[in-house]
Length: 164
Image 1 (cartoon, helix red, strand yellow):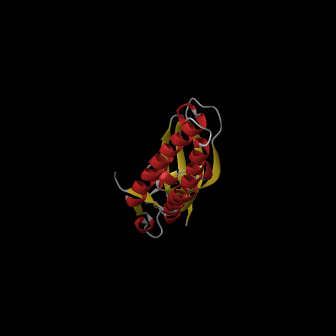
Image 2 (cartoon, helix red, strand yellow; image 1 turned 90 degrees about the horizontal axis):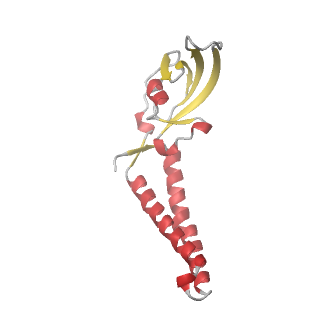
């Protein structure tokens, strides 16, 4: 597995999920399996089968999380002061430039993005993966600089207004 870039928050989230699965979820499943055994013949017991299937999924997820944590690198050290980088919260002005065939007028909007590792990305919450085309266009820029991102309907221009 290649190195996985994560923020401190992202690593904590992975560790918390692993801890929950190892402590709470494993106990819940073990309890369900024991209860299902009390129903009698397990060969035709759907509750037992469901609990065993969930156990397999949880154990698989535990192994995946352990591997992710083992192969993770904190991205905090990858930032250059005054420039957009991993872990940056970036306020941008977005100019949606219509293509020639588009008759809508262009408009500007403000948006805040946080550039995070791929496992933490949540575009709805403004958390974009450092591997995304937008993040790649923004990384390295300073306040006042612009980036253009080609999208299916044309080009969108992003101007960096603030970096935190």
